[in-house]
Image (cartoon, rainbow, N blue to C red):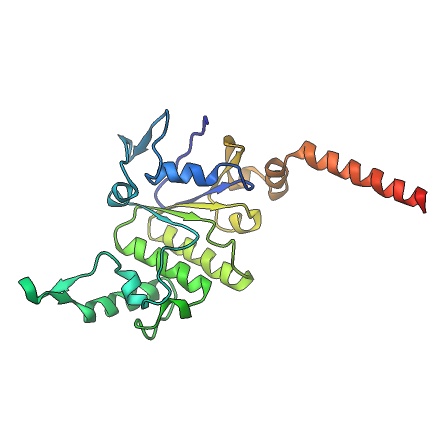
Length: 245
């Protein structure tokens, strides 16, 4: 409610907030899952209304959700072109263009820094970071102008999270506007150009990274008063425990 949010080409705009802050609802509005009840969405300064996620995707807004929309038992190449398979031949003799499918998959993954030696290997054999690379590379190849990443590092270890953060930087370098949704301040700060903080469905403000410290962001996300009250409560409990002993 009352959130004003913008992303420019060639920048990473981090959407930060704790669980329940409204991050997922906001990106579902931006990606065509829900329609806004008021206000408007502007794309290249023109008002737009998305009828569906497919409509948003056709206009260049690609969303990569946490489940990545991949099929683990299908090959990397089949997942890359799922629903958009290039065909060769004529009439009833049309067939998938496998040489092109495998070549493009290998090349686009390499651009993201992932060496896929066998595009026919099942997606289930890839690491979490490599699956994120597949989802991002697929979106970029099919013409995304805005890339929305929903908690891409939440279920990853330190090394794989670093891989995904590098992918975000690569996407920015290719001129995309990247919306990076996360609740992890330490993942946001290395890549963010701007940060918008959400709390209970409302914006706490948008800041350039140099305008605000990590500590201040953490305090605003968690709620400074709640932390102070909790610290005082724990101190009182500790004193009471000492007295009982």
